[in-house]
Length: 144
Image (cartoon, rainbow, N blue to C red; front, top):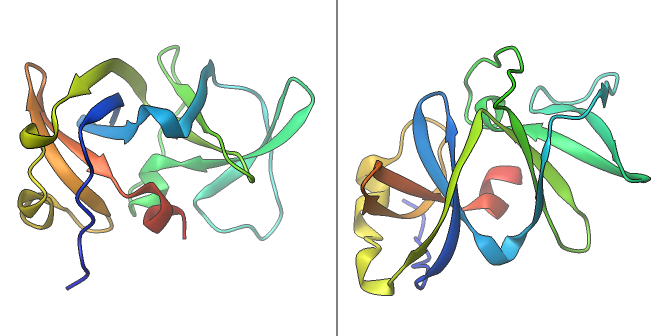
C-alpha cells in the first residue's frame, strides 16, 4: 500500500469524468479551455491523446478516462481541457468542469481515499459537497 499524502484545505477545481466527480488543487491549474484540435503522436501511450496548440504553445493532452484505464468517449460541447501549470504544462481532457470550491482541511478525509479508489485512480483524499463525494486526484502520480 502506498503512503497517502494528506492535502490541506483550500480551493479545488472539480470536474467530471465518466460520471465521477474529481478535484485538483486550484493552484495547480493555470486555465480551463474548450477542447482544441489535437495532433496525434505516433506510437504514443494510450493516455496521450495528442498535442494541442494553445496560443502558440504546444501542450500535451492526457485523457482522464484513459489515465484511469477507461475508454475514451467522443468530445462533447461540455468537454474541457484543464491546463496544469508548471515547468512542463500538460492538459487534462475532462468530460466537464463542475465548479471551483473552497474546502476546509478538516473536511478532507485522507483515510477514505484508499477505500474510495477504483482501478487506476490515484487519490490524496475525498470530501463531501452538495454534488456528492469528490475525489482529490494525486495528479503527479497519475501522470507518472
